Length: 170
Length: 120
Image (cartoon, rainbow over all chains, first blue to last red; front, top):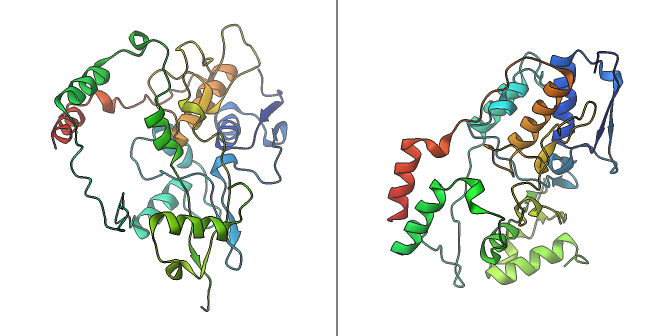
């Protein structure tokens, strides 16, 4: 491909938006030569964020932009200027946001009496530990096709995003 | 549940958790569905996911959560961004270096902490 190329990206999520940014930043492709095709009226895919004070806010995907092991993401965000804070990059904006808004999770599990369930113990048997150790050492090719683990997929399916927004003046 | 509005879902949840609905009386609960949110954890073979740029592809690439990046982990923003960077750099012949995935799973510190946790 050359800098005269036109690029078409299917879906308006972070993957396409990142690809467009890399094409512009490092590939010399002009922004007007990149088309992002999105079926919904809103861009962002799972990484959307929308709403206002009156109607409340909605973010479909969870955000884990607090970790230090996002090599490519931070590299990209360091070169994207912030929309809201002139002179800052999106990376700096994110770090500042994280410093201002600390996680306030006080319980991971509650029981039927609404009591917090202690989760410091993993409750593993020695066999569990041995299997985990073996798994952590295993090469992916040696594992073969993955099978459905109803318990673990059930836990993932249990991810539930709820956003409580107090209305002003109440 | 798909027919419920946010207020109804919140009420149902409070019922399950035995939480006091009064506490969240002034909350807005906006319902949204993500039916494919667990799809990257479906059973698969190692050969199921294509590389960002499949062999012999000159102008076509795959990005985001369903491509093969051997050392990275799905379900993260990073996976989508890394796949995009790999696809763009390869198709456009960009020789800049893509940062390597930090091998946290091979870190002695991580392994030691996992061992300690396993015995708790």
